[in-house]
Image (tube, rainbow, N blue to C red; front, top):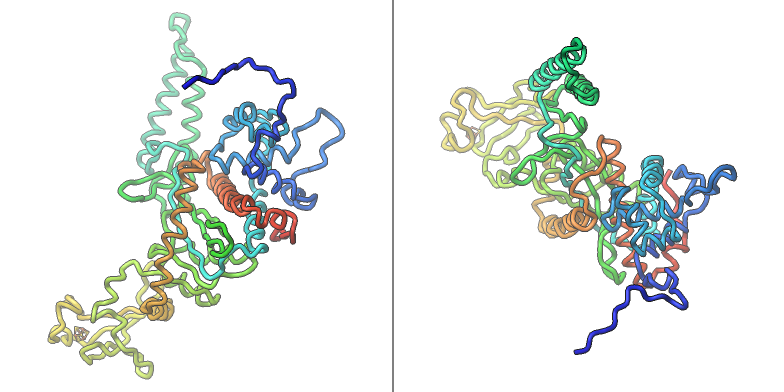
Length: 489
Ligand code: SF4
């Protein structure tokens, strides 16, 4: 087979334009249309002056800078230095900027100045999907994923370790100062930089100690990112954040498949259960409507969350952490409440009388117990209870009614059929964000910064989904120039 000629020096008589080099359905074109569709009011909400200042040197157009950031996050290029490089040697970036080359400082200043307001773009992507009736509102799923912080886990210490570290650093500083202040016979061996580093470390340790002291329940703190926490993941411990997302699937008849993230959240502890009601609420607010049912795994199960959802008319399909115990013939749900006497009847026909209020973690529980010796004589002793001293107790918390109501619902086939969709809805979303958007680790530090980063990742994920719909050509014009979604206030 003959080989083709290859000439790297070849000149063009009529050079191709950048536009010729970018396919018509390229995601960069979608990003450009998305950004160009922002009007003056939208830019004002983003805190960007779109007209520019007539005085001074010309600045890069905000459209170019915003496009670069959005396209970068969509394709896993998230650092401003990598974006700067891409703006010099990658066709989609050159096309987006009109062959301009903003440097990393310019890109960083734009991001830093507007990252909080960029949440509006996330809301805009969701409203677009709702306005175009792309979403299947029958179901939504929530989940959390642990994302690593931009800090070394080895710089995480408890109060005692911090105290010892502070002592060592202060001793080192005293030593350096003594050497630098030595007489002419003693050469100054330590550079001022070394002293400055130690002083910086001392300041970090002091701040970390003050932070740790102010947080009652926190036992360890990281010196680099004081907001990051040690969290359990499958088989290991990670220093990071608990990033939350609520997702809704696209309408199955729409032609394209995929998900839209309708709410994003961030928690600095590993617990998911406090996030259930806020995430449902945020999704409803962003969409301007609500999904019929929310799917969540057992980590979200809590009486408080269920009661809040019930109060707001939210239906949730979710198992319990200890689901297997529900089949126990002596589970407390098998005990019948008698309102008249404020007592419970056990499966063996014995009465448990109200005894007193018991406080657990500050929450009041009503304690019921059998009369002395009743349980010890019961054939179910050893199964129902093993307490030789007190016999069987039943405690009723403030959210018991909501828990019982939810158990009745979760005993139906309908609930389990719905719940089985959870994994296929939300877990691939985290896979795409971590693998294709290269977000296994946050780039910034601090709770506010990683929250903004996570929100922009959510926006980028939604843009990828909307781009697929757009590239089908079905909604291309309608999607961007049709009924205009308004930013949420
Ligand atoms: S052990 Fe006590 S509470 Fe349990 S079934 Fe027997 S009598 Fe009732």
